[in-house]
Length: 508
Image 1 (cartoon, rainbow, N blue to C red):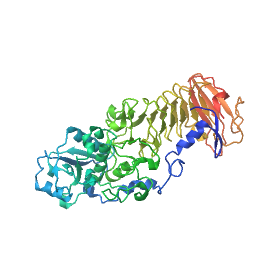
Image 2 (tube, one colour):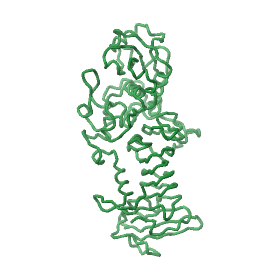
Image 3 (tube, rainbow, N blue to C red):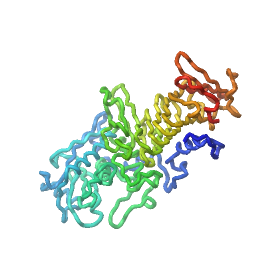
Image 4 (cartoon, rainbow, N blue to C red):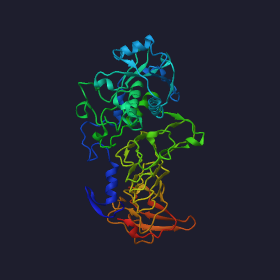
């Protein structure tokens, strides 16, 4: 992937690496990514509000102190429940139209565990806590499992929003005659039932579908006819009915098990972000992917064949410390695109657009895998970008970065002098002269013509390149002069050690 071949671009003649970076900087961005057929208007920052269109019944639980946790009690209603035959339960079943020819069902621990994981997924992104209770009358939220053999629509879980007639409880009803309950694989991570549980819990918390649609025997919504805005797919919200292909992603038949990009923004609007104390060492970092410490299966990979599907979302820290967020995709063998910018999507482990980053979330470390990866940094300081193997392409973004290329032939792309300056410079740990490349084929330095490598000292003319070795620090620095009216300081990259750099190590 570190090819120095030139390719045509609308703005000139750039290297393959630059063209790939330019393309992936706008990947999945509607009206910028040429691979996406945009059928509906993108709402961008307005999209999360589309799943907040219902009245927020739980507002009485929302404390004025935004750091205060909101507590919910939930009850799993089955034929084994002590309250199964109580009048209040019968009334709730009648209200939900599941009273005729219906009996409550018995479910196994695997179903209950899958449901608990879905509750935990919401708990991990908002300032809410869920506790299971044994009795129906204690609960704010109820999940009732029943048997019924009439109509396809009865196979889909559904939720009734709370009102006075059902004891101020939000009720979800699940028909276990859905054939997917007979196959335990559908209870596993990224499968249909897990997605359905997470979706219905979203309804319990007063989130709605992104559009005014629902499903029954006669009407099956479609993205083309029923969606009202671009972001109404599972890539953006687990509350959607529509698959991710309409917005350019490809999950290869998998479903989200946790809240996605717009779900997180919406639920935090209602309850605030999740809050943690960082006084202990365990919470000093959050690692997604391999060696994960999130305790969430959809954010954890243990071998190269595992599949990830999640939106990264860091907690708010209640003390003066901070959390370091880490993307560890080092165990995958496929070519990957890892984009560390918030609200953007990455191609991880063979899927397309399967990892996103929530609004306000900063990823500080990215670790690529054994394929030929493209790693795109964000505009934050003190971040680490690491390749493992393969021929990788790095784009650091603004802000100072440390980068390690790894074993392959690596290319470091710079598009602008502000990307690495004397006051905010990148450090490359393991540059291999004659193998790795610094790609300046699209570099904007404010001057005209080509860069000049044949100088022993600066004259002040933009585009002069000078190498300098510091024996005391054992570092080599590359400086490039720029037009002072356009940039605050010289372009500068630091290389650890004393690599014997020459003009041939640069693509110009």
